[in-house]
Image 1: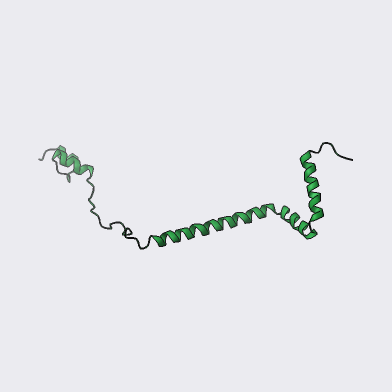
Image 2 (image 1 turned 30 degrees about the horizontal axis):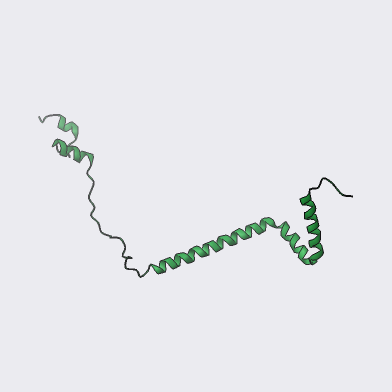
Length: 114
């Protein structure tokens, strides 16, 4: 008794599965079933292994690039000493512009001396 509502792809898949069952050893079939049940774990293990491999490749390439630039004459480094000036404050700029004493507060400059 054939079921007519099953698609052709499904029928082919069932035939292929039956063919595999006939051709494979029972222990191989058990292995395939167990792997099918552990899909999530297999994906997690493969992602961890891929990340580890990527880290190994990156660290190895970093080591090789650092070793290749170790003895080059351009590896002199930046100059360490430099000239540093103290920035001018607003009060100093205002005093320089108006000619007043920057140390005296503005309310003292507003009143004449008695």
